[in-house]
Image (tube, rainbow, N blue to C red):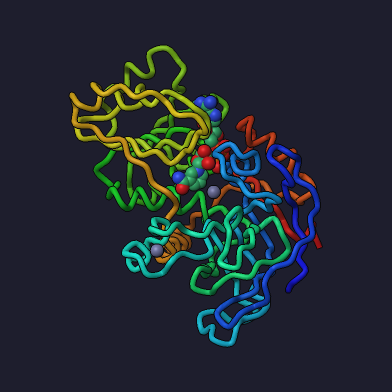
Length: 347
Ligand code: NAP
Ligand code: ZN
Ligand code: ZN
């Protein structure tokens, strides 16, 4: 077993503290990655605080992982020592259901094995990237293109793919008007990626102070949803809305901003349900849909797309000792736009 250092929540809502644990030895198909950077996703906070239910503790969060390959199993052909590698939100799946065969492991019928807060075949709780190293099956690891910095690439492994995948699935492109709701980690990636796809982007935010950033990131318009008149002005305006908001809010108000046949795509995952009014959907044949991350093949495609289009996440790099403060700042919307932990601080 490999002695590993990390930061863990020992119980729901406990502050994260230093934690030593063991990872499995490097098997024939595995690689060992020395983690250099790991993003802080709002899902880490939801799960460390058990807001969705089912969290497993102790929990080392972190699923936006970038590092350097330190060892490769003898059957691994795709990575060699010294390569950069990434790990996203899952580390295994059944590999035999239709979804897995299609490369959509995130929809595995047996359930994907989450990078942390999952239980592997040996019965051990999986542990994530707020740690100095991780062992992963090479088939579930990503290649990080040369053109991307490690810190700027880490958030692509969740925030990037979570916004790229639905934009591609629904064919959002040049002739569409897209609204991005919530300008946080996911939202800022949605703006950058949609712009690279040629889409006209409007940011719908609660924070006036993000206006300039939104325009710099590539939005054409910026609106404050709480301002009187904003929602009335934008009725039946958008082809697509991607909703990245982490807290409960009114979906019905957003549905009314869609054109006939428009789609509201939910990626934000608040812990409480929201009541839905049928008529705004019925009368304009509108849809509400959801989407979760993306498969390994599509995640690699997204990384290559980002390298080609010079897209990285806007990050604030912190030492791991500041992780609890960072959580509080994420909850206040006080981050531009992703915290990334520099794991050198743990060594
Ligand atoms: P984040 O950085 O905290 O961004 C969320 C944004 O939502 C905030 O910046 C804020 O934007 C807006 N917001 C927050 N509270 C709000 C409220 N009460 N009312 C209206 N707007 C509010 O979080 P993130 O990491 O981007 O994650 C966003 C959500 O997506 C989380 O629920 C996360 O668990 C989920 N997620 C889902 C997937 C998936 O596969 N579907 C993957 C990753 C994350 P403004 O200041 O602009 O209003
Ligand atoms: Zn995430
Ligand atoms: Zn499967």
